[in-house]
Amino acid sequence: MTTKKKQLMKKLLLISSFLMLAGIFHASAQRGFNIGIGANYNATFIINQNIYGGSPQLDYKETTSFAYDLGLGYNFTRWIGIKAEVGMTPMGQKYYNHDDIPSITRDVKLSYITVPVMAHISFGGKVFRFYANLGPQFAFLTKATQSYLKDGNPLPKFYNPEIKDSIDVSKTDIKDRYKSMDIMARFDCGLDIILISHIGINIGVSGAYGLTDINASAWQLKNSDGVYKPSHNVYGGLNIGLRYCF
Image (cartoon, rainbow, N blue to C red; front, side, top):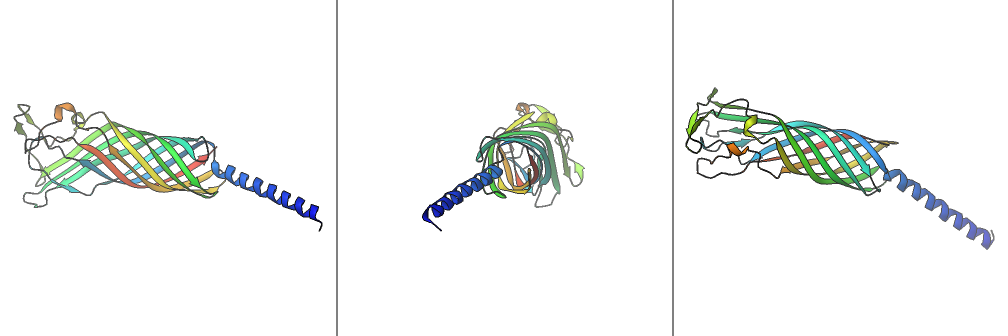
């Protein structure tokens, strides 16, 4: 083989390699819109419980819930994009009296429609890509209930000198005691797996921390020590989703 032919083959090989790599990058880039559904299994917390100036603080108990969402994203490049979701996200906290004398239990359930708007970063190859999302999440309260029992019965009303009135501490529907919206900081990270052309799944972790006090202003009452502490929603857990890229 002559020198000219060798040089020509090298050039053709170089061009072919470049085109192949470009095709891989283009396939893995998934520029444009994508839509998906997801589910989370979360551990939820309310940091700083509000017992309206009543009995001493209760102990925290493991609290979990399932959340679901519909997401829409747009990738500007193979590295950077934006993602927004609309989800049904239960939050809340269970409590108990560890002494068990008397037996006191409380289960606060808060239901939110959540709307995160996040920056999306991803990197990796054609099939496996790591991702991270970060941004604000707006949570709109749709329902708030509780079960607050002492030895299996509702706690009696008690007089709170701060508001100069009696409080039905065991009231079931307590939506009026919480703000209608919470603003949270949301973070996700995990792995995207491209199954076939345009379709992939994501597996990762997701969490959010409430930046605002969730208690309504009229219910920001001091505890039994005479101190008021703002309450904050927190959750974190495992996430799995299915995504279609246009």
